[in-house]
Image (cartoon, rainbow over all chains, first blue to last red; front, side):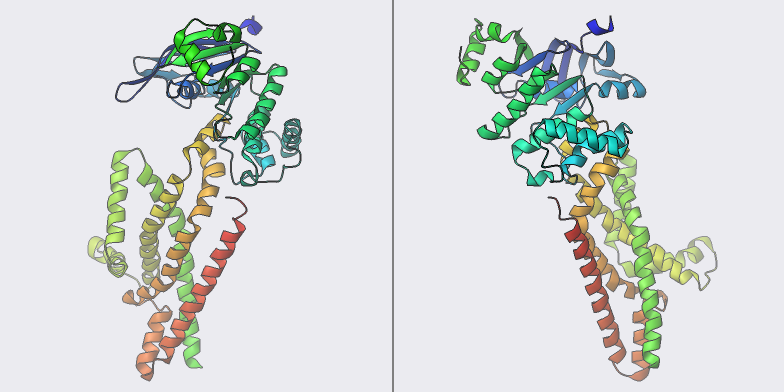
Length: 258
Length: 213
């Protein structure tokens, strides 16, 4: 039974910023184990807010977020209830987030960026945490940069370190918030390669992206969001063959082939 | 020779005032900065009033107030030993107000993304501050803290106003007795060398922290 539980369920999520600025409206999304879901849509459509809500960096104003069958947060008419502190701690361990602008810790070396959260927050012994960090860094092609500092790395390398940092905590589901938007085309390829590699390893991922070709290739499902609502949710083939004029126009503009 | 012995005695007091003030005002300044940034409005106002007074009135006057307050306000008689304590209290609460603003500027300059990343990685609010934010704040605030520290070295001479025998007080006495400015010049040289050392140490710390941007 536990295995059949979806990893993540968003139920009727809404987010209204002060000044009655509705950013998300009635968003429902279910993600099962091993699925890769891409979220696409024009700028300002609420994609990033959706990720921030799902990772609880931003309070929702309505709806419910359920991780592995456990309710993490519920909001109704501005009243928000989080799970208990201990439950929250468990729930937060089940997801990781990779940011658009990496948000690495500049005062830590690459190795420490990846190992320190394990040591501080999961009470893993230092030697063990560093061993694990080294393995993950090697998997992402960063084995020679362990002692470098983030400022000494290229953008692509920084983003790979931040993916390694998220992976070290062994999340069940990994969120990506436009992971390549801050990178030039060459470095983009290098990061996308890593994400594809993770997809091949059956990592559950939710990816906000503008890379249409990549989304088509890597995703099991693509969700198109505009003005805070889900316009379409389907397989890449379905989405790229949609009759919805707006989606066709959007995909066409971004150079995605039909 | 006598003059140097006396000045050396004063030097010790000057260095004591300097070190003790730093020891108390830096942590106090951090606390004040937290109060200043607090979401609790009354606390924020209280801290703002405190800072307005500390920064808006002469330190010399504050020294006098702290020294005489126990007698005039509480009717407690002042013992001679309280002079030095009063100096430390007045300097500490005064400098804490300045350090608080430096800490606040440093804390607020850390990108919000650092907090987001820490939260997602499971850091608590306290451990986020201790492990992620504060180390970066220290690096950023070294130049303004150096400024304040250098000012503090020179401000120690204000202790003369409540007759604490720090170096400047003694230098003035000697100079008046001998009708010569030699003692004052020696004192000036001492402040200069002291500050040179302070600036050098701070520069070394800054260099040590320059391994990242």
